[in-house]
Every structure is written in structure tokens, then in C-alpha cells.
Amino acid sequence: MILGYIVSIRVWITDGARRAVRSDTLRGGLKEEVENGKLHFTKQTNRPRQRPKELPAMQIVAEAEPHDNVAVLDPALTELTRALQRAVRARLRGTNDFAQLEATTHELSNEAIRRVLQQELQQLAAQPDEIEFEGRQLRKHQPGTIRVHSLVGPIDMERWTYREIGVRNGPTYAPFERAAGLLQRSTPALAQAIARGYADRPSRALHDDLLCAARVPPSRSTIERIAVELGQQVKTAVRRVEPALRRKEKIPEEARGLTVGLDRTTVPMAERNDADEVEVHYRMAYVATVTVADGDAKPLHTRRYAAPAHEGPEQILSRVEADVRHTLRQRPDLNLAIVQDGAPEMWNLMRPALRRSGVKKWIERYDRYHVEQRLAAVLEALEPDAAKRAVIWNRWRASLSNDDRAIYRICAWIGARSWNCSAQARRAIAPHTMYLLMMNKMRYAALKTLGIPMGSGVTEGACKSLITQRTKRSGQRWRERGIEAVLALRSIVHSDRWPRFWRSFAKPLNAIA
Image 1 (cartoon, rainbow, N blue to C red):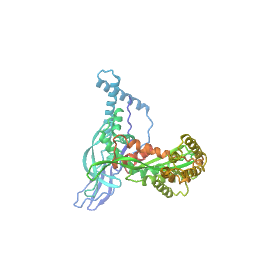
Image 2: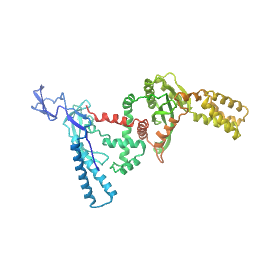
Image 3: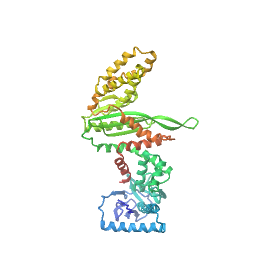
Image 4: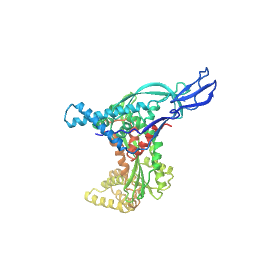
């Protein structure tokens, strides 16, 4: 087993690596020197100490990936392999069970990696007394010990906190954690594993998966806490990161249509009543989709966004608007359409969103599946003979696919037959006939050549894949912070943006100017 770990971050303390003596003299004759990142004074004075004009600034310098030096690397890996083999044999004491050998090899290699990470982090934590951090001049405040979680076990280490110079009782800063790229006191690899895993499954299943992969994760409750906090950070970072990702996205040449849709589905929420007891209430979460399709209305890519009920649809609609603007800026020739069910409140949200995108014309269609459900209910009430009903139904479906005028003929037939039906039948079909009044939104034949689907299957499917599969497992109930976090993570994953988003999301946390 070959174990390799590449650490490609170096820390420089600018203006502190070499001696710099300032020639200027402060008031009161105080001369100032900087040596090895520390401030020294050659003369004492009764005047108050002034803030220095310049302080060492901690920087992270990303290095280019070096070419493997085979002459050095191969012998080192060979030595590492032999050392690991000796350690495994010493632990097993002659046991020949391969499964136990494999498990022991993982255990010892995890411990070796943990020690390497601990040493590297401790070196990175060695910082000067005074530094510049995020535009602030800071001075060491208090030492302390923290626990950093990793894929190979906990890492206990010492580090200093800092406070801004001249600010009394101000907030404390931990520049070391930012310099190391720690997220919620987790190493970058563990943080990404938790965030990505929590998007798909509960923390208990994620914890079990990491154990089965021969890792040494933190406890289930710690994973849950880290995941929720990371989800909140991702939710906040969407406004900063997503526009940059969107600018680099290219619309395929074969694209012909652009379809948007909005829908809702329920989420079980744990809420406290007036007696401070927890009750489960099902609240309607929002789902929005933006799909680019080819000439056969086959999706080329889809962006899926979700928001819990208490947040409302405004944020995901703003993301839809940005996607529409970006897509039409590249391809103004695309046919734009809204395809969703007939809920008036959803249409009253989506239409203004397109207007805010600068669009003046678009196609509107009701989801064909919902339309056919209504037509089937009406036909069953008006035609009692099952054989005749089957013939009429097949004719209706074929005509809807091939003739944009078919819906008008169908509604005319329904109107004529309803005059001769019973009062009970008329009452039964009344809600459906009201729905069918929007006949101009039920013309599907021309969509085949426009790259626009006849149904809102993408949006309906997103309700299931984005929300239902993750939030409605047996016994699940959610609080506001938890559902916000998981939907923020899943929206990135199910929009095929996760790897690019995470790189951009983590990068500012690592960089210190």
C-alpha cells in the first residue's frame, strides 16, 4: 500500500523573514525594528505605544503542481511502504488473515496520516505576535488548544487567537484556521466529504459509510452539526459564487429550447405549539427548474433549485432569472417557455420573474399530464360505456399530439355532451371544465419542433429527487436551519455545479491577503 500526502501550501510572513530596520523615529525618540516577524523597540518611553504603520501580513501562496521527481519519490515511497509493512507485521505478530491485515494496514496508515497532518498544522499555527489579517492589524491575545476533525481522526493542537490593535474588548480572530482552510474546525477533505455526503443522506448513514471506508470520522452528532453549519455557509455563499460559475457556462450548440417551471411539495417540519410541545406540520417547499433542450425536447442540462416554505420562492426565482438572462445572452434564438401545472399562484410568481429577466415574449403551456387527468375525469363522467370511452380517449390523445386545434374540438364535445348529462355529473365535471377554460395553454403539437417539452416532468421530478427523497424518509422531521442547509447543498449538487462550486466556495476561506 502506497501512501502519499502532498502538502502544497507554504506560509510566508512578509517583511518578517529578513531584518528590516526603519530609519524613522516615533514621537518621544522611539526607534522601531522588525526582526523575525517580531516588533522590537530600542528605547523605552512614557508616551502611549502607537500603532505600527506596517505589520507582517500572513499570505497563502498557491504553488503550481510540481512534476514528480522519480529519482527522489520512488525511494521515499519504497521506504514508506517497507516501514508500513514492518508496523503491520509487528501489530499482527504473524497472523496470516488477509482481511485482518488489510484492516490493520488502514488503521496504521490513518494514524500515520493523522500525525503528518498534526505536525503540518502545528507548524502552520506558528505565527508572529502581530499580523495583518483581512485588512486589520492584529496582536496575539490568548493561547488555546483546539480539536480539528479529519478523515483520519481528531487532531489536538495549540494555536493563538488575535485581537485588533487599539480595539478594547473587540472580537477575537483565528487566522490560523483560515490559513489552513479549516471549515467548522474540520480539514478541507473532511468538510467536503461531510457537505457532499449530507446532501444525499442523513448524518447517521454518512457516519456509517465513512466507517465502512476505513476512515476515522467524528461522531454522528458532530457530523450533523458540521453539515448544518456548512450548509448555512453554502447558502450564504451562493450569491457570491454562483454568478461566477454561471459566467463560465456555455450553452450547447444543439440547444433549441429553454423551459422554466415552478412547483411545490410538502416537507415535515417540527414546530413548537403554544404549550411548547413539538408538533409535525407539513409545509410547502418550492422547487424551480431551468432546462435547456435540443430540437427533440431532450434535456441537455437542468438547473434545480429548492427553498423551504418559511423562506419563500424569492431567492430561487432570482436564480432562475439569472439563468434565463445568461442563457438568452448567449443564445437569443432559443425558444423560451413556461411549462408547469395550472396552479394560478405558481404562474403569478413565474411570469413576473421572466419580466424581471428582460424577456417580453414566451410560450405558456400547462403540463400535459395534468390536462389529461382532467380530460379523463370528464370523459368518465360523460360516457358510461367503457368501450366507447376507450375509443374516444385514444382519439383525444393522438389529436393532442398532432393538432394544435384538437383541444378546442375536445372542449366543444364536452360542452355539447354536458347539456344532456345529469345534474350530479355536471357538478362532478365543473372543477375540470373550469381548468379546461385555458385552452390556449393546451396546444402541444407545435412544441415538438421548438425544443419545448409537452409536460413539466423535469419540475415534477425535481420535487421528488430534490426534496422528497431526502426529506421524507421514515421518521424524519426538520427544523428551519436543517432544511435550509440540506436544500442549499442539494440545489448545488442537482444542478451539476458541485465540484466547481466547492472549489470557489473554499478558495476565499483559504486566501489571506
